[in-house]
Length: 187
Image (cartoon, rainbow, N blue to C red; front, side):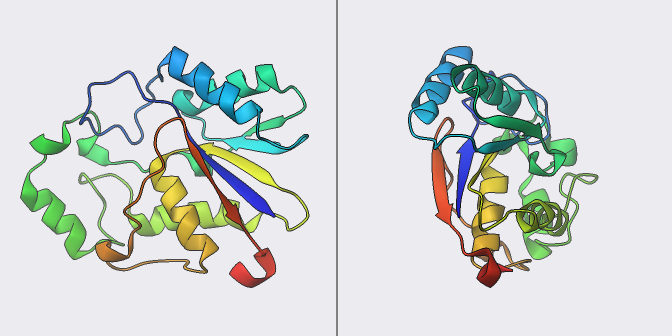
């Protein structure tokens, strides 16, 4: 099966802002362009699961407008990581000591004091991943962190402990990547 991992279009925030769980809109023109490009390449009749955050919902709705054969479903497990008190702050305004505390316990540290842990993110994305079927390709419209988690899950990695285990490459906004999965062997 093929899992299409699609990242939302650029958001309407200043560059360099942490916006994981913030429900911010995406650029409308970039969303339309991404939907148009994606509509041309997706096979017919796929199930499209989307993060409930509006930047992903915008893309899902624009895509569905072009491809009504696609079946849309919202899935809260595909929302981006909650960065707690870091949400809405510039990345360069977050103290190095806060980053150090996270990397010292990368899997278990609640980011931004009351945000999520990487362990929690991997667990909820793993639950969505476990519902995929070998006989049905699927599309996830989601976020960079969730795409990275899915890449790990596709390799059979259910949890990580260290920051250097987290994938560094990010799918660009409005772009996608595909994973060819044999689910019998990846769980």
